[in-house]
Length: 454
Ligand code: FAD
Image (cartoon, rainbow, N blue to C red; front, side, top):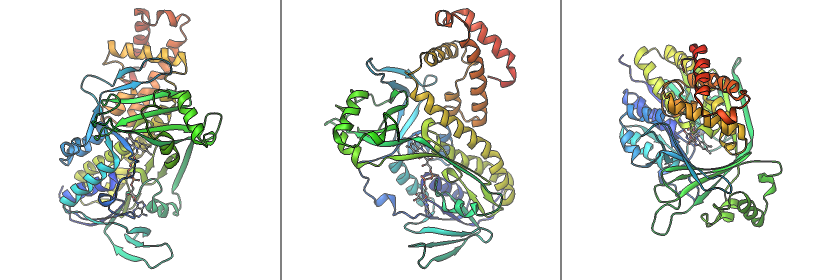
């Protein structure tokens, strides 16, 4: 359906705001993007560079507006996990099927590229203009240097809030009656560290692997950058016996790494400097509803649904919001009231599902070594999935390598978990886990659960 061009403001020039700008510009709208920060293209990155894993959903959204190939130039495919278990040689676990990979990409570099691409498409950016307030019914936004200072007022037909987890646009919507809002911080925080490149610019670890050092309640991960370095993240409880609160000196930091990650210590040159220079950040899940205000205002990306990062899906989910919104726009043309109400009813259950899956995946990722039953269960699942790939698609593959709704991945994962609970009850499962008998039992439980369409 043809669209009447609208004057649209997007608040936030992050990954979601800049991709949404490209989509809407291609539909012929006049787009201005506001960001409180300076233009990221002129900002020197410090030692810290957050890395993201882009998977199917993200690529699908980029492909739709013809920028997938451009972005792939700045990404590295990872086709496996490299698991570093304490006291054992590292081992590899292929992701999904042959050819399936997640892609490591620097958030800052990607953001710069997306802003370039949006500008090429005719989007106007206004940096260092923080939005302090929004008049929801009228589509007015107010920007200024400080909250109490003088504000500028701008009038738009439509306003999108792509201003991240602590969204100002959402904040305004929150003050309305019947607006639901929940936020939950987990007791694990994270800190980023860097493994620098070798002198000749090569990577110190395998560059096509997502490296993970699982240690029960905490873990360390590393993802490669194009310049030969790795961005690493330490996920660790804030409080407790092994926790951030108990690492207060360079000696304690060294001891901690020597004890739990002895193979990491030699490759991070500036371990203790990194440790104390870089902040310890918190992780939050934010849910809210509604996401829209009539035909005037909509939240997209983290502003609508911030999730913990353990499935690597925050940006992917935000990009999928845009892809879905675009399909809905194609269906309803100029009826923005209908577009927004369809968008939020379709996306909200999926956002809740990926929030839940992400939360659960932390437990899964960090327990890879901890619980022998858990490890056995995963081995049985893996073996069965290899033997019957059409009957057992792991939740990870459904989330990462498909575009099927997140709600299906969650429902399917729950169904599989129920089956595995029964399998793990088999008295001598330790001995017979590779037998035909176990396969047959899983097959029969699957056929009982036909409705889940595994
Ligand atoms: P943001 O990136 O937060 O951008 C919001 C923008 O709005 C910013 O530019 C900000 O300056 C601007 N802004 C805010 N307030 C205002 C205001 N009042 N006025 C004007 N501008 C404003 N996702 C993945 O898909 N894969 C991963 O592997 C992955 N790993 C992650 C690892 C970690 C440790 C974390 C924390 C997140 C990870 N994510 C990952 C999630 C991903 O980073 C986010 O989902 C994504 O960046 C959200 O994009 P956004 O544009 O919605 O919000």
